[in-house]
Length: 565
Image 1 (cartoon, rainbow, N blue to C red):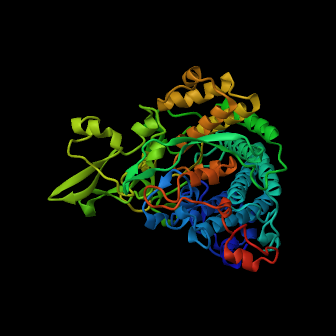
Image 2: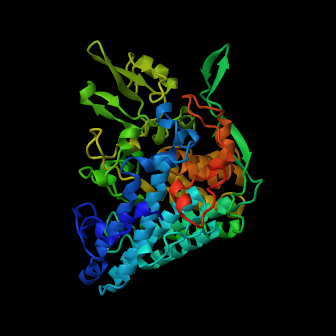
Image 3: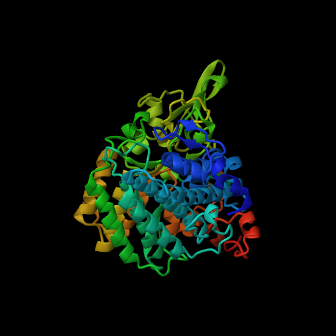
C-alpha cells in the first residue's frame, strides 16, 4: 500500500453513511476509532468500507478495466486506444482499479478490528463482520485475477501492519478469500431474515461468490490440452482492396492452457465444491429469476430477487454515482435536437450474431433504432443490425423505411438496454446499480461444475439452464441436445457462450477467457484489429495487468513488475 493511499486509510477522513440507508450520507469529522467503538457505530464502519467500491466507478474506471479488453467489446479508437488496445501500463484506470480494491482491503481489516471491540448485539456484530469479510474477499478476488499474487493483509496498516508486504502466491490469496467467505457465510443474515436490509450482502451472496471462486480455480487449474470452442474470428476481409464485413462469427476450437499460478489446485475437487455451493444457494430459494429481460432491467427491479450483489448508487451524489450508463447506452440529448448522444461503448456484431431468433436478450435487450443526427429540421434514424433491412423496407417491428444503415464505430453494434435502468436519463451521473453477481450466473456456475464432474451435463444441469432459456425465449438445451448429443466439450463451450450472452457488459468476459486459458487464442483470432480499427492482438504479458509503478518503486519486497511490464 502506498503513501498516496494513506488519506483513505485514516479513520478520521472517512465519510460514513447512516445505518438506515447507505446512500444518505452523514459526515463525521475528526472522529477517532475509540469514539466509534464507544458509540457503537458499526453500520457507519460497514458503509464506509463498501463506499470504497465507488472509487473505481466515480470516473468510470471499473467498467473499462473489466470490459474493454475482451473479444466482443468495441467502439471508437479514441476511446479504446489504451485499455481496449492492451496499453495497460500506468493507465489511470488500471491504477485506480488497484488502488480502489487495496483501499477496500484496508478498510475491511481495520473496521473489523473496531467492530470486534464494540459491545453491541451479537447477531448484528456478526453480520457486520460478515459484510466486511465478504467485501475483503471480493476485493482480493478482483486483485488476484487481474494482477496475480498480491500482498496479503490479515490486519490493517492502522493496526500496525507494514505498508510494504511481499507478494503472496495465487494459492495463498485464494486461501484467504475462501477463509473470509466461509466466515461471512456463517455470520451474515439470510436474505429472508427480517433483519436483512436490501442493498446489503447476505448469506446467499457469500455462497454465490464461493461458487464463483471455486469455478474460477477449477477451470484455471484444469490441465493444458482440454478443448474449448468460441464463436469469433476475423470481422472483415478485403476483396479487391475493399473492406467487406463477415457477419457470421466462425466456430473456433482451442486447446486451453493451464493458468500460471493455479498448478497446485485439484480442478475436480474445486468443481465439486462449486457445484455443492451453487446447489445450496439454489435450494435456499432466497433468489430467483425475473420473468423477462424487460422486468429484470426495470428500474423498479433494483436490488430485486435476481440481484445478489450490486453497487449501491445515488444519482444526486457525484461520489455515489457513475458514468457507466451514459457511456454504454447513451441518452436523448435535448441540447442536440434530441439525438441519442454518447453510448460509445458497444458489443460487436459478432456478439449479436450468437443469438437465436426471438431471444429477448437480442430482441428487447439491444437498441435497434436510434436518432443519430439532425438535418434539414428533422431527425435522422439509423437501424441495427443490417440483416433487418427487409423489416426496415416494410416499416415493421418499429422501423421506418427512411431509416439508414450506419457503420460508424459506435452505431453499428449493440447498445444494451440493461444500462438504461436509471432514474434520471439526462446524461449526467447516474444511479446505475452495477450488477456484480446475479442469480442467473449461479445457475450457469452450477451447470459448468456439473458438466465437468459428470463427463457431460446431467438432467439436473439441463433443467437449471432451461430456466434461463425459458426466461430469455431462447432454444431449450434439451432440444439442442436432441439434435446433437451433448459432450463435455460441447456443453462446456455452450456455457461459456451463454455467459457471454447473459452477462454481456457485466465485467465477466475477460475473466472467463483468462480462467479458461483461451484469452490469447481468442483475441488473436480476430486479427490485428477489429472492424473499428481497435487493436485486439495480445501477447503473454497481457494475461496480467501491471502493478502501478508506485507500488513497485516503493515496496522493497517487489523487485520486478508482472511479466513483460
